[in-house]
Length: 183
Image 1 (cartoon, rainbow, N blue to C red):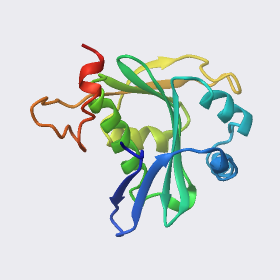
Image 2: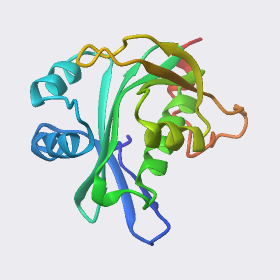
Image 3: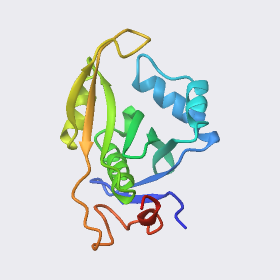
C-alpha cells in the first residue's frame, strides 16, 4: 500500500518529499498561500475544497519544512489543478518540478489523458514555469477570476506515451489495481 510519499533529490542534493495534505498543515499552507498570491485562498476555502470527494491536496517538504502545495481534482479523463504554489524561499530548487512530476505520475498511473489548469493573465512567472514543464496555453478564459474579473489562460499538458508492458510508467511504478478500474 502506498503512503502517498515520494522522495526526490533536487539539484542542491536536498530531498523533496511529497505527501498528502493533512489538517495540521493548514497554518503553513495558508501562510505560503498569502506569500504567493495577491488574491489568496482562506483556510475555509481550502477545507471546503478538500471536503469534496474528487479533490486531493498534497504538500512538498524540504527538510521537514513546507516548501509548496497543490490542490487538484480527479476527473475520469484528466486532472484539474486548482491551486499550485511553491513558497518564495523554496523557489528555484526543483520543488515545483517534483510537484509537476507527481501530477504526471498520477496522470499516467491512472490512464488519464491530460492535466489542466488556469493561470492569471498577469502571472507571467507561472505561465513560464508551466510552459517549461510541457504545458501549452489552449484558450483564453475571459473574466475567469471572481475576485478581480481578470482573464486567465487555460493550460494543458497531454499525457506522455504510455507503455502498458513497461510496468513503470513515466516516473514510477504503475498502480496495478488502477489498470483494471476502467475496463
